[in-house]
Length: 305
Image (cartoon, rainbow, N blue to C red; front, side):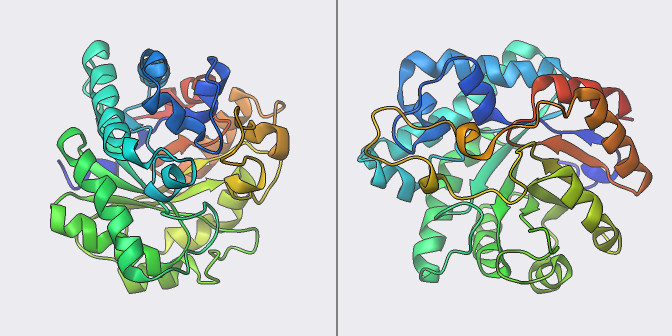
């Protein structure tokens, strides 16, 4: 793909997991959106959720395998479905693209391989195997990899070792806290300095509030890369890992909204105003994460070049 793809304004999709829940997904245990990959009755729901974002103006969709990391599937006693689920995530994204007849791109999600929003302290070899096992299954279906909500240079370096071997470019998504630091206590600039290589398409703030994006945007503008965000609309400004609100033993997994809340007052118009302001700061990679709906993406789609 064109390595300068994100040098002009591009619209990403929004929150797949929450869109699936809104459409009727009943997640099992802490599998969350991965339930829709394992259970065939939800496959068309995944396609429809992708199509919602494409029809709203998204130029990039992300594969729905965020929760299909090996450790999460093992905890829920469905590790034997790991390969099937991750391949299916790629297949369903491609199906949505084909149905849409739009020239969109597909980003292969490579999420943090342990809990979300916290630093992975495990051995590097274990983390690398997690990234590789997902990446190799997704590669036939995707245009690039999206390092999805990473929390420090350690896991970023490990993930990049994997993606370089598979010879696909990457969009790097870093998660930061209210203090502007990653959970590793590193700054965005420190992670870029340690990890940046020629495979980077750009860098985004991943699953953070619009306010945190706005407070940190000046630091990112100093980095010589296309930049932007996938903003969440949780009420909780600093989200917590899934195990805090859903147990693998639950017959029906909890909805994260019940714990972290959703900002119903953050309308598409507000998201448009926020996005327009970020474009004025130089942001070109624009999208949403948890609780960002197709209606939010639709409002900002008019801003693309």
